[in-house]
Image 1 (cartoon, helix red, strand yellow):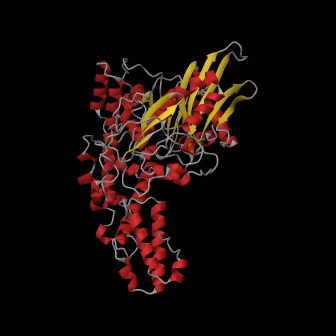
Image 2: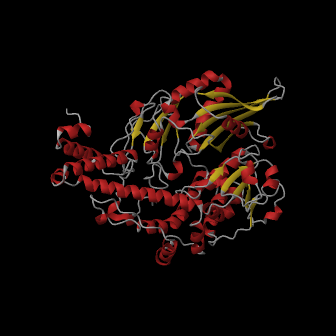
Image 3: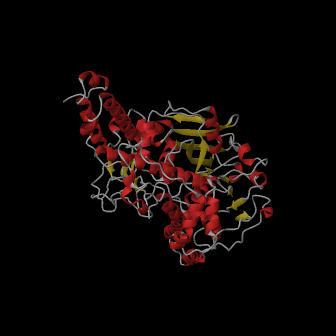
Length: 605
């Protein structure tokens, strides 16, 4: 069940077309197929107007090469394209976050990701275009506003010709997009080639990317890169949860080398396996925006676990800060480790043993050992007391004094254990766990969706000649009263203190982020319905009953509505914007010529 556009909105919300029945024709490299997205404006973004490097910038901010200098330490050796801008603070963050801590002992090739604050309020020339492409993305896949992701391919191999005795270098993709699976797959193609052929190879890869179509939700894309072709689909917020929308081509896809079934999902079962007896408690901690630290032996395990935690409440967007890999050199180190105030709402992934002491005052600590193979059974672990965590060598487990609100679901534990015993494929275990989290989150969110939908004014209260009606206020006590008859017990068999969980959730950043988004969507829906009501009116008959001054005032207000519809991409029915534009032109033409000039007389064919 999709969480956006609940049935309770009734006549005010239109259902998007079902994507399952769509078919795709054959695809050639760098070609795209447009799938029907949800409700939206009349115009699709015009990609033909994009300038050189605009297509590249729609995917990546830049590519960095970080090396190790005996005198300088980590240093950014190359930034590509060369015109890309990074502040000194951003470069410093990238340098320290692109290498594992020395204690990690990562020999060979290692992949992980990090996330860091954007140093300056840098505005992109693609701003409006990217907002349009972002409109139909699921909440968890929208572009980051104040942060960048860094996707790292780190190589450390013995090299006697170097003073240090080791070759150490990272190829890093910097992006606003949280497409972790896609970018890691991309690095597996790019990095080995780069380490062998150096910068000319990087230039060729960037030129390939600048010919890619933009990552517009709902499209299946074939993306050529260095002689390999990747096929992906960018999800939309209208997709049915847990269904793959990747449509196969009519041909056999002879040119496609790699088909990615997902661009962003991590393997939840593998990540949670060391602590999977506590998955439900971890879901509650993430849902409530509690301060969490993941202590892991390597950046790969640290970043995967943090991303798994953030995604376990999907399709709800995690609204607090999270750092898949965090170091003592991070610019927010003092801010996040201070003991003078309560730990902030943030999830940190760390590997340095120093953090065992620095963060031991944090309320919830997850210790991850080396991730076990799927054939090994994790032993049942009790929740450990925080005082037992002295060093990073402590046993794996969850260290917290937190008491869960909900009773533990023994069925999911037994199901996963049985899968391990029967050697069920990891992909199947992952699918079971992802569906479990999805259904748990939906059971929790549906009562909120139902109540928020009741705050929407009735469509009959919308008058074209009055301002659109306002949403009613969200009143916590009123919402709590609805839970007795229409609470999560309708869709979940879990018992426990659901009321207490909701009460705490309403104070959390995740509720604030979710409600802001829903309120904006519903306000835009009201504006769209108001616009559609205006389009159904006979404006020319109405202006005959009014003076020229009133008619001019009407035209100006209608032009404002038109600008708003295009700027905010209001979810109006197809043809509405064009119809309103025609109404405005007709009203202007009915005015005297001198006024037509003032109101920018429309060009006649």
